[in-house]
Amino acid sequence: MCGIYGYIGEKSVDEVMKGIKRLEYRGYDSAGIAFQNRERLCEDENTKNGENITLIKNKGEISNLEKIVLNKNLKSNVAIGHTRWATHGEPSIKNSHPHFSGDGKWAIVHNGIIENYLELKQELQTQTESDTDTEIVARLLEKYFNGDVLSTIKNVCHKLKGSYAFAIITSHSPDKIFVAKHGSPVVVGYGKSYGVVCSDINSIKGENIYVLENDQYAIIEKGKINIFDKNLVAIDVGKLGAVKKVERSKLGDYSHYMLKEIDEIPSAIRRTLKEYENIEALEKILPKEKFKKFKNILIIACGTAYHAGLVGKRLFEEEGIYCESEIASEFRYKPFIERRKTLAIFVSQSGETADTIGALKLCKQHGLKTLAITNVRNSSITFEADYCIYTNAGSEIGVASTKAYNCQLVIFYILSKYFNYFKTGDEKAYYDEIKNLKNIARLIKKNDIKSKCGYIAQKIYKSKSIYMIGRGLDYFIAAEAALKLKEISYIHCESYPAGELKHGTISLIDKNTYVFAFVTQEKIKDKTFSNINEVVAREGKIILFSQFDNSNKKVCEEIKVPLVKERYYPLFIINYLQLISYYTALLLGNNPDKPRSLAKSVTVE
Ligand code: AGP
Image 1 (cartoon, helix red, strand yellow):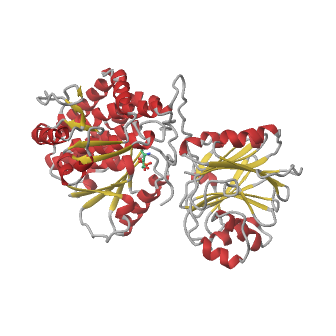
Image 2: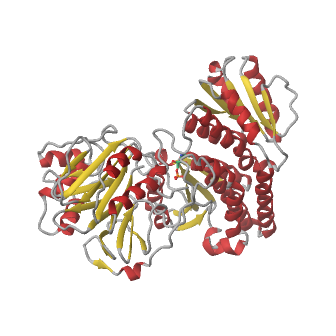
Image 3: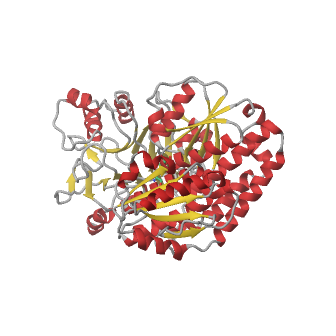
């Protein structure tokens, strides 16, 4: 989703351009920059002058903006930039950020959504240039300016409903960037000769980094920052404690992050295991005395993380623990059933997903204890949850989640055995699980499947519609596989529980339809094979993934997968589907790292 980068110091325009490029992976459809500037530039549809501030914006890729900015050889010590993912108004130059106030004395970039912007627009009784909620805030700043910039920002923020991270520059107080946060992530930092603000902890460059909390404000200057609480009382930054900078991975010899991240799965799994390979390490984070009282589990997440939660649910059930699994955006708006002795688990790679965090807050309001499983240290969810475990997958840049998903599964494998240990006192099962998972990581590394996956991609890439079926754990593989394929190939792809197909969807199967079938669970394999026969009878083309011998010779392709314990197939087989999705996207000329309309971290509801 949208990204903010601001910089005070030499070559601030260049720094901001580099900063917003690092934010590209989060997904966007336009970009812009505002900087303090005493010269008036020649105005056109991309460039506008305010009072000692200039805006330059463009639609589409950052390179479109870069072409204009780099030509102008701009020199400024204060700049803010933005990548926009459209929510209010189409992707266009006028709707992209930054936005000016009517008098051109304020320029603002914003992540989040102002829910009461139409009411506020009426209060302003003024025409706006864009369709955005953000421009209203710029105009409110102008209207309510009381001589003091920070208190004006605070007063305006108090009028807003919704979520925001703002970076603001103003000719009333040049040489400063003002920041406000409520609900949307933002981090600030400084070094000897610069100050910096960014919406993404993975993308900020600099020392002394602080994660702003809700309703805090910051003033950034060259060489220092001041942070204030909701009443504008200054907070001693020494007491806040700077956070460790996160190392962002580099593309190296790879052409795409997605492929790099798929290749990193074995090492990512090993890193996840390393932190928890001693049961005592997990006990320190999730104290046995507190956790053994939980008899039920509720898992909540979105997208791929939700699919990891489905596997998690089944793993807990295998240990005899009642477990529900819910999509965050649905869970939040249905009647809340009070639950006792229940641990609520929230899964989020980014730790910033608005609906997942919203659901977490709701559960807390109802008195549930909450545990976050996330990949990003110091992400918003880590401040909200009572407990937190990290997946340690390393930074994931590709929009399509790959290694983070595998590591989420690893955490569920471990957690299910940790809960089993409360019931049985049996540590051995926990350590066996760690050993088995290490073996799976080894096997994934050894399993040379790229050319096979490329071959399957060749077969399917012209399809209009694809189905993925399985039962039990195999259905959860199908669910994640279908999401992966559709999000980067744009081919319509649906997952179905194999036994459910005949209740309607089978009418869509014909001789042009590929159906991926996953059959790895002994107990239900014959049932799924019968469903496969039903598809074949309708001339559907089956691509089978199984370790079992297949008596049905009519499948179109058969991928015989290596033998592993059945419970590990979701972790193992998804590797094939991640690669098939990747190669299919390439064949269709799509950039798998930046699929259309998608964002890496979904910070709107
Ligand atoms: C994954 O490939 C997707 N891009 C998406 O479904 C993602 O998993 C979802 O938006 C949840 O994100 P999170 O894990 O950061 O909360």
